[in-house]
Image (cartoon, rainbow, N blue to C red):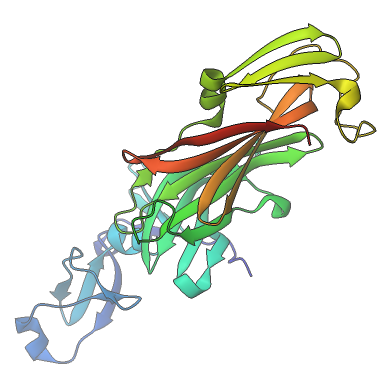
Length: 286
């Protein structure tokens, strides 16, 4: 169940500096360094303060660690803590969760996504469509053969008949840095050339392999996604990522007309020099 939207406004006072407090009756604790734990992990950077029998923790650090968005309104002299977070994907057995902070009502896109791994969180400026049919996919696998697992997040900007727009992000769970991955459209630009022979035939060179594609020879000719004629070749409207056997692939539709396809380019990735690059590229007609 998704949490309900909640927002706290804290007036400027001691509580604009502190978010959480509790009584301590043991006076000997004043002489000791106070340790704070969140979800079983010690927070060494919070610098809790003992004031008048209470322990205080800084509001910004506490709230952001819990996945909330903290902002300061100088005119009203208030701290605004927005806890309107939704969990949109998870791998519970690995304590991995993906939350969203904001939603753009005009575009129906979730923005500012929070990755949480074993209680440690980081906000990324990614976006994904706010539809139950297009929820993100998470994969926790060794994707670069270093004997350690990486987190892959597949996000969607939407899909429909003949249309799919996906992005992929690969995160190092040890330091929350993101590994670069080559854009499939850049790969196609550098490795694929086309020549329209007629309105029913095109020559496509993928790497060193040349394919002559004729509309009458394409399987499933009755498909609504097959063009009646080839007007131009483009690749922008169907991009789909998959992960199988610890390998990332991207499938890109070859459009002979708008949202009409004469084939699909498949790109297989591998990890080299700190980034995911093209290993193989091929074309198929179904």
